Image (cartoon, rainbow, N blue to C red; front, side, top):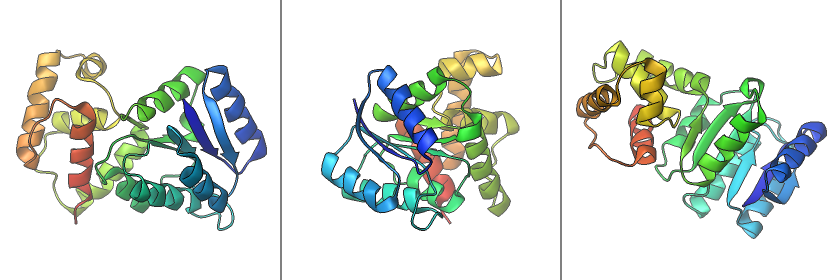
Length: 215
């Protein structure tokens, strides 16, 4: 599996390269600036991109903007954002395009190699891998704008876990309820949000996030 990595800090970039290679990923390119990332994504067509948000030359949201532009040129390009910050505007735009293969992890909340590698593989396969804090911030901002279809606290908890990319079985285990109960909550969520149910976990998560992104 070919990876393009964008990280401006040498030690972290080198560490990520070594970690990915240890798990049999091929590093197509490891770059440190926005322009280099744009060229690598355009020319190398990787299986997945692992991207920091703040890259030179602007050190603002260069990496995320490059990822958005690359997904416009190549819809569905798997992108895992690895950052110290939640850039809400661009994160919501990235999540809401509906093409799958999206992750957003916070650097200081990645606690072991298996967690990170699992996220890279899940995103590369077209799934989602979202840090709970990222989802909470996005949902919290939306809930301040208007009620989310009258969701109950329990349904909101289910939706947050769905948005992290968890399966019904994983949600049931986390909440200590049955999978049947999770399925019922999911059905209620889609009914209240006016969204058609789907057996595709990734599509249903993206549909919910796209709904939350609407004005």
